Image (cartoon, rainbow, N blue to C red; front, top):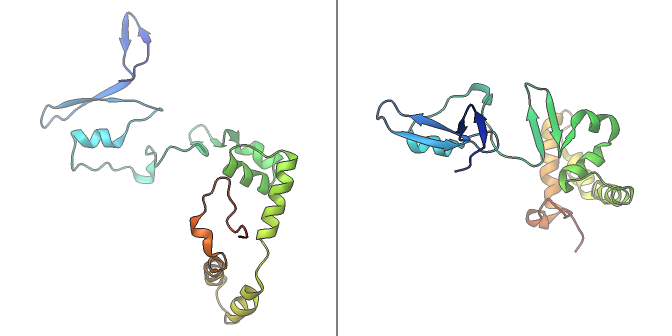
Length: 173
């Protein structure tokens, strides 16, 4: 059990909470880790009880090393960088590199990254000729986008086996 040495008067306080089911009298101590408690710990004491949190205002869906949000304090960080700093001083491609690689790129890394991205943004001739021109003249743009993205995945057959970090989705083999 993780505990924090906090002195209040002469007593030490554990970094945990104790919950008691008043229906049964059963109690359980749950550790507080990373400023939160695991829902699975609550469910051991309260099986079949659901927690209602409209808007997920006090519910974390995951732990992320990519982003941090504190809505009450107005904080949004990407990989530790304030969003305001990224918006003012970084390009879209620099932030994309940051999200995938954990750090902003050096000028050499950025030049390589930009080249890779540029190479992979060309539209294959088959997509333009056989697919995009095949939509009805008044087709809804969202339907066209959805269909086009699906079609692009067929031009990169091995894309389902690549991992995000350190790989390119359509590297020639």
